[in-house]
Amino acid sequence: MNEQLKHFIQSNTPQVEAEMFALVEKIDAPAHLKESMLYSLKAGGKRIRPLFVLAVLEIYGKDLKAGLTVGAVIEMIHTYSLIHDDLPSMDNDDFRRGKPTNHKVFGDALATLAGDALNTLAFGILARMDLSAEQRIELVNLLSVAAGAEGMVGGQVLDMEGEQRQLSLTELEHVHVNKTGALLRFSIESGAVLANASQEDRATLKEYAHHIGLAFQIQDDILDIEGTTEELGKTAGKDVASDKSTYPALLTLAGAKEKLADHYQLAIAALDNLQVDVSLLREFAAYIVHRKN
Image (tube, rainbow, N blue to C red; front, side):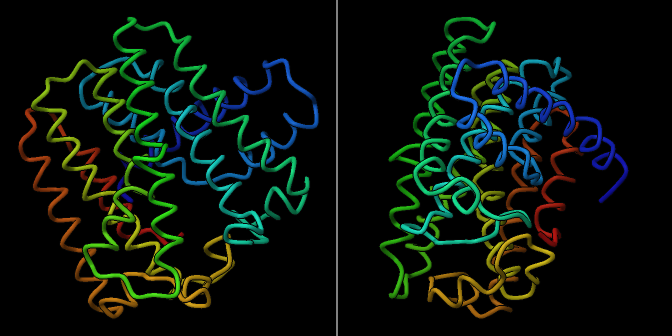
């Protein structure tokens, strides 16, 4: 990781987290529910999605303040999806980010409701932001698509339906363009909305986000094989044990690494169409393909 990206992450991650925790702590809700919500929000993580919002604002020279709130919202949606993914009825995981999963601490019912609460709170926060009505409506609409049946949730269903059978490469990419990629695309596109970027630039950033989303998932699949439970903060080898369709299973480990490099290069190539300093987004792309957890 180069110094520019390291400084950016170290400067902004604590601000995103402070915003996120404050937004939850101030709501009027049962104490035990808030405790469950904050337990998973405070479990850590790379905060890649909120940092992408801020990175887009940064390259356009815009104030990052609104990006902190939108980034916090995205992390709430992401965290709710992880709480639900870990439930016994889904992936049945005992650990997430090196800590017992939410349902292991609070029980299945409260974990489910904590996820529900984070999901619905996120949309309310967007609706109340100090932005133009057009921007608020667009952000709510884009997030509803990215997080719902047409995006993340739909991708999760396709992923479940693909268990116990080998998906084609096209089918596998369709799963992950939705399951992992949709929320990453929203992160980058929401930054462009806040920055008032042109439609041409937004199309270019979506192209970058598309390839970054697939690269992120391919690296996840590779790490499931090459990483340890300690490094990953979650159970290593779970995909193989569950007989899930993954890029290494379909293409071999070497083939998956080739595909990872392809999507990285396509993401970098998309940035060449922007007339702003894109060095920060280039470094984020490199970070995603070289990360160890």
